[in-house]
Length: 116
DNA sequence: AAATTGACGGGTG
DNA sequence: CCACCCGCCAATT
Image (cartoon, rainbow, N blue to C red; front, side):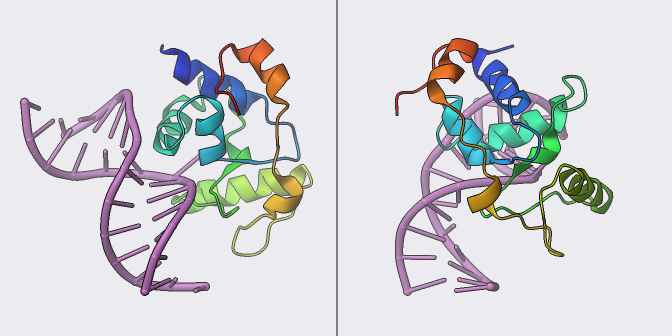
């Protein structure tokens, strides 16, 4: 497995309860700005085996964009359960809930990360 | 080998 | 707010 994928996994696992991160944010942190689509793919294929908190990942506008109705519902439920308020359209307020990790600590944990 | 496909993002009008 | 376009990139066709 390539290091980028591992970074993404590590970052996602590091999103605390009650917080969310965006696809782009994760990609950038993992060293691939613009690579949001890889995050999509990883989330889609590795959520189960790595027990990723996939429900804490939303798009840049703070929307739950999952297509499958059932999973959409589950994601909202998970978020509500950990205190993240989302409206009827499945949107959360990024100003409140966005997780902004401490980069220094991330480097210790994940190795090389892009300079800011 | 070339085209398609995503739970995306940013810019523009 | 919406529609549209273009960049992104690995896995799958």
